[in-house]
Length: 196
Image 1 (cartoon, one colour):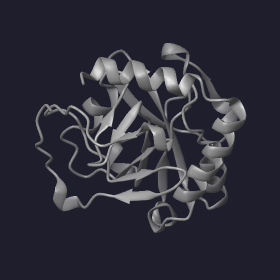
Image 2 (tube, rainbow, N blue to C red):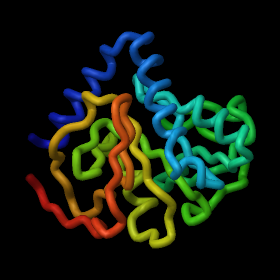
Image 3 (cartoon, rainbow, N blue to C red):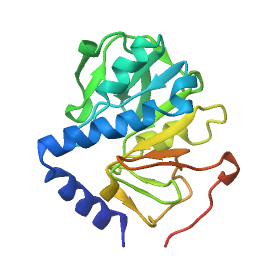
């Protein structure tokens, strides 16, 4: 199935999630990540601002701050995605595409982030991700040798057996749903699966 079709189907399904279901399952997903040794060990964490019924990340923000971790959020500048440290969740303002973004100029390099929580429309059992089609995350992560652990958060219906994959697509190191945590070993990269 083409990416566009999968994206449309998944976005429609997510849009129809009841608010209380989205909230409750997001809490489970965030707790599942909080319970991992990877989150505990990270000194710096990148999160995203959820839109369109994406898995929430606010509990992750508060837990990271309580633990003394540095927390960053992405900001779009033209074709570039940059990460800025955010000391308080109220410091986010509407930015590109209506998504809340950090203000200020204290950018962190991707290599400074120990764990990056990456948004996605769908993920597959091999750790691959289908984004919104703009390619911001793939561009910033592609070729970055010293990056932290990449984590995809998703509701279980967003996890499919296989996605069409191109050479520029970046695979996740972990996927977290309300029911499970999947890990993909570093020896699985570079991932070379072609279109399916």
